[in-house]
Length: 544
Image (cartoon, rainbow, N blue to C red):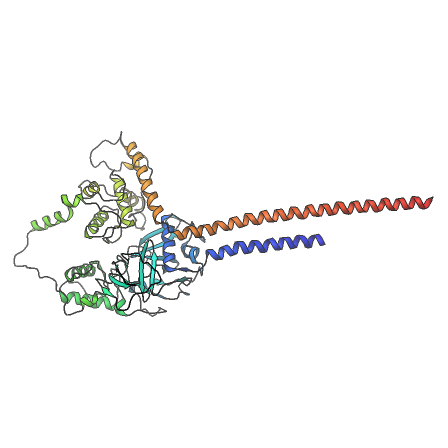
């Protein structure tokens, strides 16, 4: 009985120690996080190519809710019900990193700049896509209950620094903080690194310099005032509207653009392509940031000094010749333009034209933003790979000329997928998804558009292209993975280390217990034999 009690006590102690180690580590991995941290976590999941596993909630293998839970813990179901604040996506998304996105049966993470990340399914894995072009059809945005969102002050995100006021990061303006003036671009990024992240802006230091847009190419930016929203609300002047937004304010914008001569369409209350084009024309005429997003620059739109659209003379009918020349001039590069290089981080109207051309060839499937980001880099790489160019992700002179060449090769995999899914209703998604790094020669020769012989050179081209592409992709993945991931994965690895230690301790204690028990048993047997000998000796002596 004593032995059973000892064994039970040891097992109970080991079980308690194991529970503390394992569940303590789990709780630390699911500790409360921040909105910016969640956005970085989601981006890392995409760039690290995490797998989709139904019910998964550990780094590397997650489902849609597990992507969020693996960072900050909290609820895995009913996230929208316990959210601290929420609103309708159609009415706009606030300028906040790390918001949750919801639709029936699915959730994702808004990472700013009009982009979202979600663990979509076995056939897709973790996806990174524009909110506006995503087929998911997000219904609500919400603040994750297990995350804290900054209200005022500095916030670092994905290598940049943003300044929040009244719950949203500021854009296209400047602030004087501790005597230093910081300028913030249309995406909210500061032009300087703050010396003290806890510093706050000096009173009266605000200086607007353009449109108070959301995350540049955001499909639906701004804060919602819907009836289902909880928490703090923003005023109408703080809301931003872009392609995909709708409501009474959009109707008001369309009416004002009509009065000024920029818009000739229907007053529908829907911010469509025609409305965006008209708004861009207004911004251009007013000297504002031309991004097609209606933010604080509505003050200029509604003012008495708002510029009217230039009137076009229509005294003589135009011939078709000028139109042909105009189209040619808009599509064919000049010698000066071809000499320029466009790379990641650049932002101008020329990049918008490049993105449009990539889209026409099937390599770019979101709305042009004019910003050369990671999405554009991958699209350029895919184009270079298909056109036998050096895969660098930089639009150099050769790449630029090839883009506008008459024999530019369109995305071959777009045509292949379209042919293979003719019987399905699913849309073909091309864009910046990586093209295969290895392929058979027959797969690469889709169409001999140049009437050349590829028999002797295709194999060599494949080898060289594979090497260049692998190097480029490995560098891009290494540079975007946030440091927070390393700490999180380390905590997950500690669970297994503790389990190994627990097994070793259990084995050692068990061995010591049985060694001691064996010695005790030997001693007891020795004493018993000795007593028997003594008893026998007494018996013999009594006989005599």
